[in-house]
Amino acid sequence: DADVTQTPRNRITKTGKRIMLECSQTKGHDRMYWYRQDPGLGLRLIYYSFDVKDINKGEISDGYSVSRQAQAKFSLSLESAIPNQTALYFCATSGPSVVDEQFFGPGTRLTVL
Amino acid sequence: AQSVAQPEDQVNVAEGNPLTVKCTYSVSGNPYLFWYVQYPNRGLQFLLKYITGDNLVKGSYGFEAEFNKSQTSFHLKKPSALVSDSALYFCAVRDIRNFNKFYFGSGTKLNVKP
Image 1: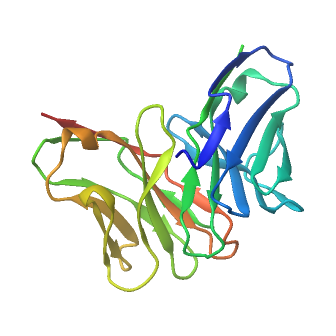
Image 2: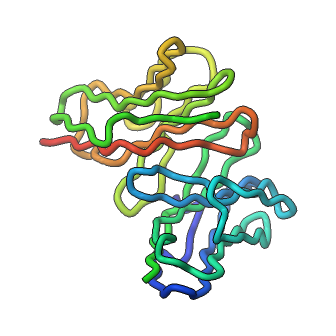
Image 3: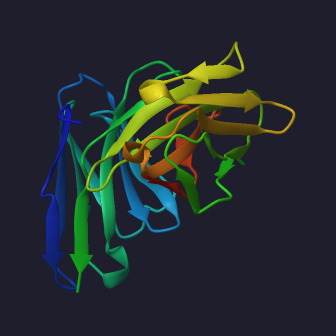
């Protein structure tokens, strides 16, 4: 997991605040992903990026935005946080082949009050 | 649509006994299937994958999984469970129409009792 890092690891914020979660990777992968994990729902894809010029919405992108600042960096923003965005957020990367698995960061636990 | 189902929220086994964590999938075409494990306060770690070939796939930490095309299943197995295997396990399928998407099951909590 050290190849994919996330900051912060924990964050408590208030409704309406803007929040940014950051992800960095040293695996040299072009593909990066943001997921949220909720109990009983597994992981749901928020956004994914093929490279710095290609960003795509996932299943649940409403209320979120992303920025791919470099190959190694992929940030997730909540423009105006709401309580139902309280969740565990994971960043992941994967290699170029269709058979490649994903590598996950340690997660950010976000609480919106 | 691509999807994965893990029918058991929780599996309890005694240490030393064999374990099975179930996964069924629904895909169009040939599936690319994965198992991941999540320990407390950690990200998901890759265990094993099925792409093609032998239906029995071996992975990390002594885990293996059996691909069954007729039953559309990909159950995770281990012959002898350890207390340290206690964790949350996720099955995932890669979308063959968009290889950059993975679909995850809801997760199964494995409890191994001493």
